[in-house]
Image (cartoon, rainbow, N blue to C red; front, top):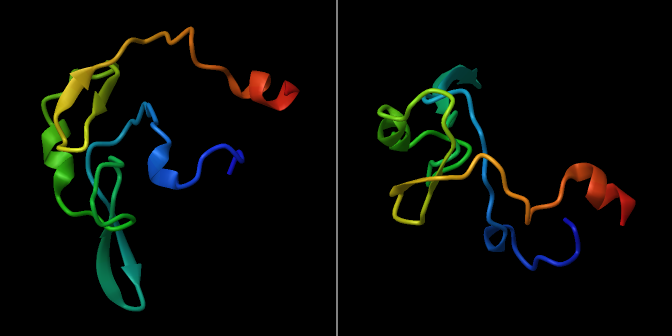
Length: 89
């Protein structure tokens, strides 16, 4: 996407999400559950991983490692650039 990442999985993301459960949708007449937490191993479909987010404190920022273990994240990341900075490059 930006030219300096070879694959999507190479890019770490910190995402502040507002949902800890799936979206119920109907696709071709079949009920499906789309991931709302961003942690599913079967994206875009839900695999139930959102259950690990049930004990998160509302409004607090976390990150999850590849084993789906939760870690506290800093609210401010001065070493990260903003979209505005990216656009100015």
